[in-house]
Length: 140
Image (cartoon, rainbow, N blue to C red; front, side, top):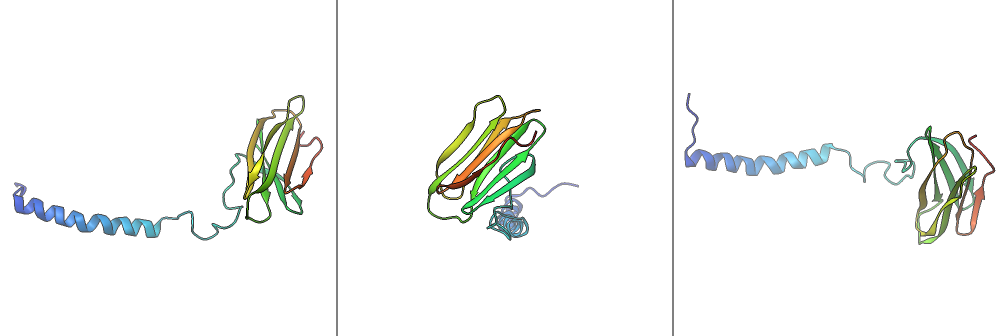
């Protein structure tokens, strides 16, 4: 059985492809989840730190979130509301090590900040617009 490879048949296949490709693309965009979908406005939708959530310390202008894997601790400071850029900072210090600090003017969050803390306690601090919280040695 021979295939029909005449110029007319090729034009027909091209015309069909010109119609089907945009239709299939539109269908895929409708069916696949996208970042602006339900729950996109919540900060809990996606974590930027690896590991499991360990602690969340709330303070009047935001919260300090800590995550832990076996070897690492990660922290972010999240403002209570998104808005204009304001001073924010997050810091983590493993026991026996120097503190790692990320600070500046951010609109939603400072961080993520990750330190190696295998078998070590850590001290964490976070602030938003001059108000914040800090911990003693935790996650020992």
